[in-house]
Length: 331
Image (cartoon, rainbow, N blue to C red; front, side):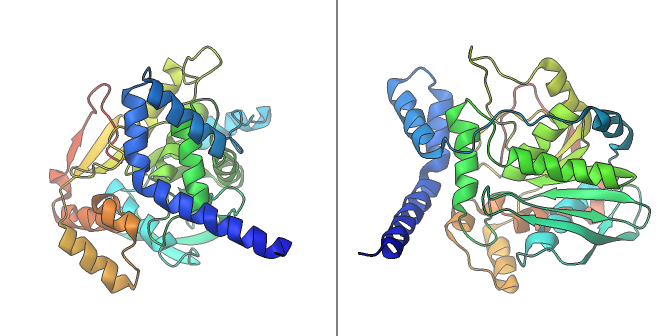
C-alpha cells in the first residue's frame, strides 16, 4: 500500500468518525455539561480531548496600540432583523459575493456593502468576511458550523475544544480575533455578526475586546477554565457581553440547548417557522438538506432568515427582552 493511499484511507476514516460524531455531539455535550462529576462523562471528555486537543491554545494577545481603537471604533448599526439575511447571503454560495446590502437600525433604506476581505482557513475551519459601507463602517462576519454545505471536521474540532475539553481556547479564536482587529484597524467603526459557532466567537470578542455584536443562534461562551478549574471569563467579561451583544433567537431552536449561557443584554425573539417552510426555502436555493439541516432545522440560517422576514412587517412587535439570568443558549 502506498503512502498516499494509506493517507487517503485515514482521511476517509476520520471523515466517517466526524460525521458520526456530529450526529451525537449535542447529546454528548449536554450529558457532560449536566454531569460534570460523573465518571462516564469524564471519560467522554477525556476521549474528546485526545481527538481534539491540537489547536486548543491560550487567548491571543492584543497589541497595546490597538486597545484605544477598540473602544473608539466599536459601533453597532445594523437592524438585528436583517442580520440573518446578511449572513445567509454572504455564505450561501461558499464564497462571499463582492457586494451585499444591509438595513441599519431605524432606517428602511438598504445600505450597500462592499467585500473587503474573505477568510476560509483550511487549517482551523474558520470562515469570515469583512464588508464595509461607503461611510467606512465595517461589518465582520464570523461563520458557524457549515450546515449550509455539510459537515466540516474543523468546526467539530473547534466545538469539542470549546465545550468538551474545558482547558483551552478553540482553534478558531485566533483567526476570528485577527479578522475583527483588521476591521477595526482599517475602518472608521466596526461591529460583528456571528452565527452558531461564529456567535460563540463573537461573544468571546465582545467579552475580551468590547466588540459590538449581533449573534444568530447563540451558543454562549466557550467553557474555558484555568488550571484551578475557574472560568477565565471574569464578571467584567460577562458585563461586556451584556452591554454589547444583541441575540437573535428562534423560540423553537433547541439545538445545543445546554451548550452555554447566553449573556447578551438584549434578546430578539423570533416566532417559530415550520419545518416545511424551511425545507421549501432550502430546496429553492438548490442546497441539499444534509444531516445537520435535518437534525436542527430550526437552527438553520435560512430558518432565521425566514423568521426575521416574517417579523419585519411588524418590527415594533418584535419581542425584545432582557435574558433571564443563567438562561441556556438555544443554539
